[in-house]
Length: 408
Image 1 (cartoon, rainbow, N blue to C red):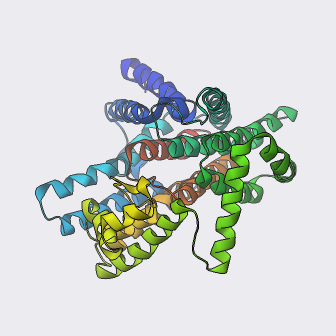
Image 2 (spheres, rainbow, N blue to C red):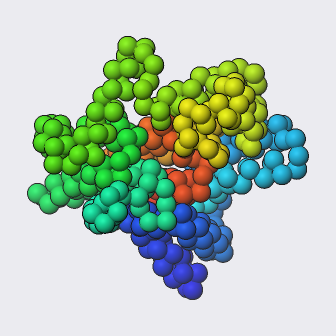
Image 3 (cartoon, rainbow, N blue to C red):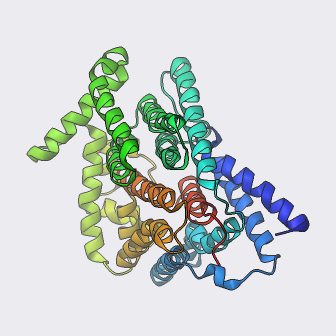
C-alpha cells in the first residue's frame, strides 16, 4: 500500500495492536466497537488498493466464513419473526475475518511476532496494575467498563500470548516474557474469577508442548514455583484461599458425583443438564438464538425455578457456556460452527509457506484457541461483542501480520 490509503492503514494497524493487545482490561465493552471500527478502516484501505483476491483463499478464512454460514442457516431456519434473523450480526466478524487478515498481511515483517509479544506483555502488566489498584480501593478487581469475568479472561489471554516472545526474542531478555502469564493469573485472582484461573491449566500444557527446550524448562520451573506458592499466597490474600477452597470442594463433589454446595456451580450444572435435554428436542438447527435460554429453563421447571437456585440468574440472557449457547441456539450446525471458529486460527498458522515466525504463529494460535475453548466452558465468549472482537482481531494479527512477508 502506498499513498494516503497506505498511511491511514498503517496508523489503523498500530491502533489495532494497541487496542487488542494492551487495552482490553481497561477498555471494556466500548473497546469492541473501537476494534471493529479500526478493522473496517483496514479492510477499506485493502479494498481500495487493487487487491489480489487470491489473498482471501486461505484456510482460516474459509473456516470462519463457513462457521458464519452455518449459524446464519440455523437462525434462518428457526426464525419465527423477522427480528430473529438479526442475531446473525453477532457473528458478522466471522465473515469479515478473511478481509481483515489479508489487510494485516500487507504489513507482515520479520519483527512482527516480537512486537506482538511486547504489546501483549504490556497489556498483561497494565491489567495487573489496574487490578491491584481496584482491589485496594474497591475490594475486587473488575476491569473498567466491563464484566469482571471477561476482564480476567482477557488478561489471561494476553499474558499467555506474551510467551511467543520467548521464541521471538534472543538472549536472556526473552525470559522476561514469563511475566506475562504471571501477571494474567494474578489479575484473574484479584477479580475472583475461577473460570480464567482454571483455563490457565490447559494453556500451560499447550505452552509446554510448543515452546523450545530451554524456554519450556523455564516455564515448567515457573509453574512448579507458582504451585508451591499457592498456600502462602492464600494466607496473605484471604479471597484467594476462599476461591481455592471452593474450587477444591467443587472438584471433590464432581469426582464423587455428589450434589454441589456452591450455588453458582450447582445452577451451571443444571443448565448443562437442561441444555442436553433441550438439544435433544431440536438437534439439527436448535431453538433459535433468542429462545435458547427459555428452551433450557423449560426443562428445569421454568425461569422462577432456576432463579430460586441462584438469584444471580435473574434476568439472565445466556447459558454461561459457549457449547450450550451454540448447541441449544443453533443445534448441530451451531456446534460445527463453534469448533470451526476455534480451529480456524490454528489451521491458518499451519499453512505454508513456513518462515522464521512459524513457531510463534503455532504457539500463539494454539494458546488463543485453547484459551477461548477453556474459558467458554464456564462463561460465554463467541457471539458477544467484546470477546468476539478480541478473538477475531488477535487471530488475524497472529495469522496475517506475524509473517516474514506477505504470502505470494
